[in-house]
Length: 350
Image (cartoon, rainbow, N blue to C red):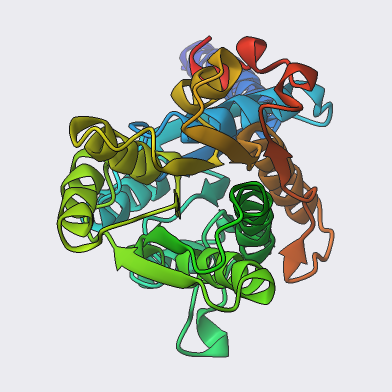
């Protein structure tokens, strides 16, 4: 009986030993799994996913902002930066959906080039509540309250200064022609709000300061593309006898007006000034097309670089001013175009 009892005790001890070893192996396995998960988390923390909401790929100028962001990301040595770029196609509903999808993907930060000046703000507020840092580029926003200002800073060119540069090009041309009471047409983009208004006001101020008797016709293009601008300017030509100079909110609108003038055989009578930067416009100037007297350069690559720089600085904890500075706009004319190596600017599609 005693022998049987000892055998039972021995078997219980052996069972306990086996169970203890098994638990030890399980703990070791769990510990290994935990270490792997920690390593994975550490590895993930070395990467940043940045959303890039681009107003419109259809305007080649905006491709330069992508180039600029990618270029700056290569210089950032704290973490690896990857992107989720989306083409908003100049449509607010598309952009709203894209921002919501980006948030679901887990973006760490967002650079947005809005399609308008207000409608996207509620969506930005939602992303901000999720802890996503935001930088607004190109189009300043018009919030209804301070609580809606959820972006870290605004990065954009001085739009009034851009209009002023276009106005100076126009004045130089009018001085050559000796027209005392010229007629100028400016095609604006109402959906761009303050950005469009500032460009027009800068243009108008410079022209009227030098030619107080000038008539400046402000024509708003609600669609904002080359075809709509062509139709708009065709109507202007039907009701306006003489037009001396045309400029506008961007190159697409001015090119549309130019196409209308060509169709009406009036391109030899009217001068055109582009805005922002476009391969076709620069080609006309380079080739000596006398209809084109200038282009106001708004460098999108610098804009993209600076916007991402601002975002990453804010994500690193730096407090930013309400506006992040950019270089002043430049005038490209037949006299100085050879000083610009524009044929190698990738964002133009070269």
